[in-house]
Length: 58
Image 1 (cartoon, rainbow, N blue to C red):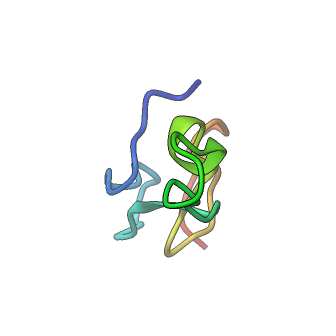
Image 2 (image 1 turned 135 degrees about the vertical axis):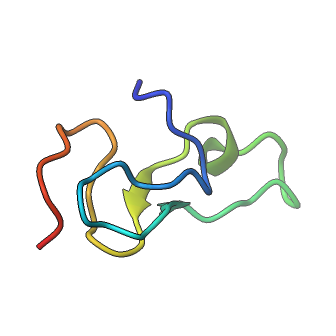
């Protein structure tokens, strides 16, 4: 687990993006859903997975 949450700023040098959840929420059907319990995060700008080491924004 990376310690990042939805909305946190990406710490990749030169990147201005933030981490977003790639999984859809289905809590309206059966809470809590996997998308909320275990979000799949990626940066909105550089696409970085927060579990990967930050290098630089391409």
